[in-house]
Amino acid sequence: MGQVSLRGIHKTYGEVPVINGVDLDVREGEFLVFVGPSGCGKSTMLRMIAGLESITSGELLIDGVRANDIRAADRGAAMVFQSYALYPHMTVAENMGFALKMAGVSKAEREEQVSRTAEALRISELLKRFPKELSGGQRQRVAIGRAIVRKPKVFLFDEPLSNLDAALRVDMRIELSRLHKELGTTMIYVTHDQVEAMTMGSRIAVFNQGRIEQLGSPMELYNKPATEFVAAFLGTPRVNLVARPNDAGSPSHRAFWQKLVPPESAGIARAGLRAEHVAIVTAAEGIPATVVLAEHLGDASVLHVRIDGLEDLIHAKTGADQAHLVAGDCVGLRPAAERAIYFDATGRRID
Image (tube, rainbow, N blue to C red; front, top):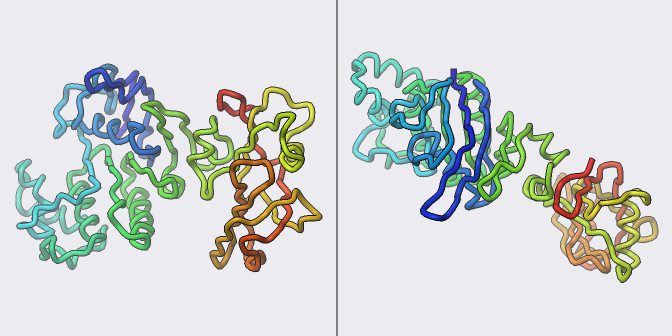
């Protein structure tokens, strides 16, 4: 099993609201990611599911059973924290089997479960080591293994990879995705890293100011964001958001807008366009712009350019054939209008 349902969940600290009425059904066996900026409520929501924070109002159901007042240890949820929280005086095997020992599981069964879990995590050779003898990535595997041996209904991850370097984060993303596929257990994963969210989640819940701004698959949120907030939060570089020009707008601003928005359109306050949908051409072939910063990444280039009259820079992601461009160069922009996303004055997407 492993179904989690949230019904009208609120959380306040004194008079300060943190979670503002969240309704959500987590499907059995899915990998759901909570993503959002710092202070949006995603970690607080995870801790309420775990039983580490009380619920001010609303209902939490785990496999159809109301869990608001069930002790954390009895909810069938295992949490992996940002800090590894390993006992320094215990070996890897002892750390992984400690919860089973406290639950009265026999030594033989503990050793069998720890051995099987270590093999799945590829840390069998580390079982006799102490935490101080491990790298950061190895410590995180041990922390994950400690959760796995409990055979929980739901795994809860609170930014578990944020202490690792970039290369290790990639490796651990692959390992966690592999483990989810092998175990088939429901996983809820909190991160502020939108790359982790896009690459790991079967669905993503984007949190903003204590509410879920949008829930859906990674590509659904990327291509059809419900709001400007979601559009801007997901994607690197950030989505280009262009406001409707007024009568005093520059000719270049008006020309760029006219390329993006059909002439008869009403109610559109801003148009969004992903960086990969902005082509770089010569100044004579497109809307004239000036390169402010060129980031050449080997297989691709990201150009940050300024259009006269626009306060924000336009970001364009192109192929390696633009690697000759540098700051100060004059270029032309050709936006793919058919890929534009439109928003009204409240920030909601207009279909």
